[in-house]
Amino acid sequence: NSGQKLERLSYRTDSWDVDLLGYMQGKQTACRGGGRDSTTPVIWLGDLNVAHKALDVWNDGAKHLAKQSGTTAEERASFQRQLDGEGEEEGGEFVDAFRHLHPEAKGHYSYWSQRAGNRAVNKGLRLDYFVCSRDLFVNDDE
Image 1 (spheres, rainbow, N blue to C red):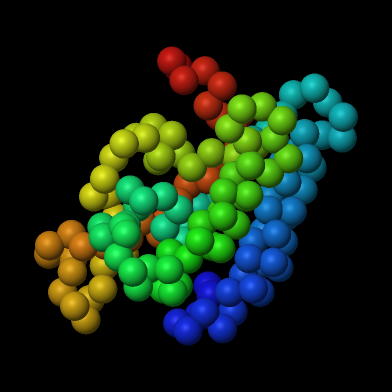
Image 2: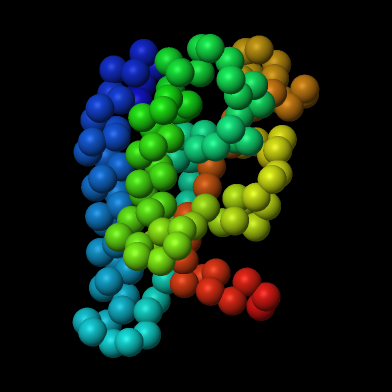
């Protein structure tokens, strides 16, 4: 992550996120079988340490968020670049599965400050994701 005082912010956005995206694109390409028309989608999941959208933060708009790890504009933009990937189609190459299936959902968080006792009152952040190849969502009706 970017570090408590954002000392690793540029490493995260300029190196780590870029390298992760390249790795996942490589896996997706390798799974395609060297030129076959069929594709094998990839999924990466876990704590990605970013609250991507306003709906992913209980107190979006709070002044301190611009300087808090996981909620900076740089981290959010970097995550959006990961979703966009090399995608030529509308919406990019990868999909935040939860947000795709629940575009207006609020209050579904995966992190709460234990020191502040925020879990009981659901004051949290959504930092955990299932990021999927867009191919998995081609037929939303199925």
